[in-house]
Length: 221
Image (tube, rainbow, N blue to C red; front, side):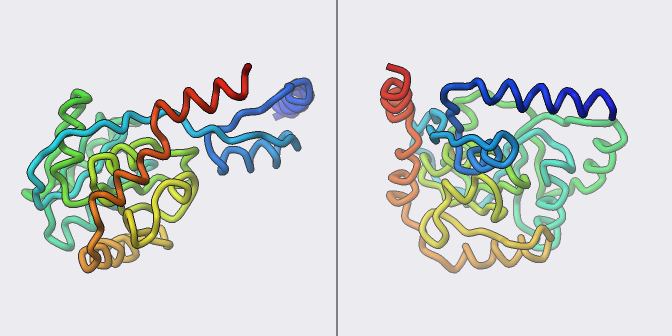
């Protein structure tokens, strides 16, 4: 702890010599202001907004490192209680005992796909009924944008960078309490909405690679 104190002081002093901070979201910009007391500009990261045409199916999708920290167990519990199909893309992260604990929640309606190629993930985005993201206070979150690029609505925890990408009622829905109950309510609420594919894709284009190159070039030249 004693050493950490001096490391924080050194980090703060070093940050004061920075000419320009570029944050990848308003969420991160707020942290820079809080910890370094410096202003920053926001340039959202480049997202591959190209998608493929696929026939829509009835499963929900999660794509992340599989751990309690990422909220995957909570989504699995919700899926089991509702009896909905869930596909989980990603590799297990963390301790071995946690992997065993998560796998115990596996059921006939939950399928682990492991790590998949980018092209396959794009197909899954386009096929799923909705994409679910539940990580807390995420810096930005590129996967929701990738899902919207495929015309797919997003169910997101109302936190962090998700607030800057998902549009409530137009490209998806938020759940406010970090509980299975709140997530289930959001899934049910989305089911009653008529989210337009075109609205999701239009929102995703705000975070395209072309936009990123243009904004970065304008800041560094």
